[in-house]
Length: 358
Image (cartoon, rainbow, N blue to C red; front, side):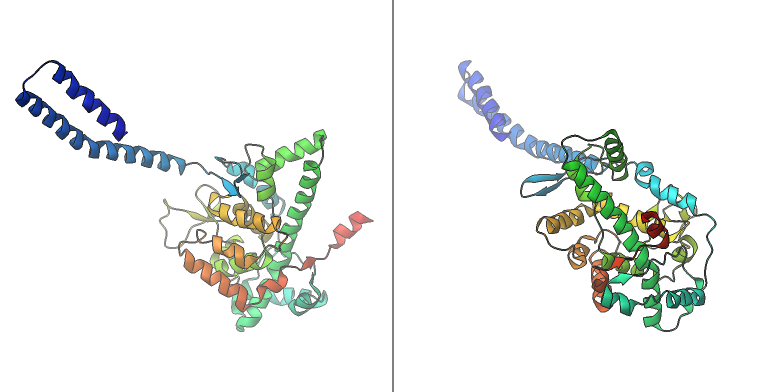
């Protein structure tokens, strides 16, 4: 830009030189040209910056998912998410479970004892009983022992998190089967179209779908649920089954007590706990704020390493307004409560699942 403007000024001076003007007029005209040149430069620079800023601001309105690994495009860019497509199966899960019963804490404890479900056994044998509760007990906040309250909460949410990870595992297995085939059936193509919508992949890019359709480490999910609900005691968890404090501006939710009734966000509300877990995983697997988390997870996969919660947690600084402090708290929760013990736990099949195999 500077070079072009400078050349134009030279041609401008040459023109008047050819007209055989006197030295004084030439000097005067040349001085004016130089003054105009230097006066205009700051304005041109400001204009250029304003144009760049305008472009950047517009790009923030688009949920872009560009991930690069060793120069290769991992996730296709400029994906625009449709909330109805992303959450359709979650809404369906909500609709199916409308007549749930809230069990009290003593009944749940007895259920755990009857099924021989304890965290000590899980840590040793890595097997989790398929006890799927739909609501948190109101009495959880009355458990005086902090250790017992934490263990009770983990026992409730652990099977739910494992179930959602199992669903994703089955989907990934089917996806890889489709990718490895040269021709796909109409049924497979229909399934792919459904998954593209669920994961917000409007470009129909298989590589992007593969990156997004992946598990969330169990220890990370437990830590976030613990932090967001105060180990199951928060109003949002008790009244709305909101385990992860996800916000909504349009959907059904609970208003924070100190918020204006007509303005601001609400905390998403669910009919059952399972829907909250599914929505949380879908959020991390699709939202642009967590694309670096997905990139780190994909890199661990490529290297044949397990998905490490202490690696991925570093990319959750945008989950809460506290930023890096939030990451520090989650890391502390994972370490202090030995939550990584549950990362390789397996969910035993339910009686219904066993019957389907017979």
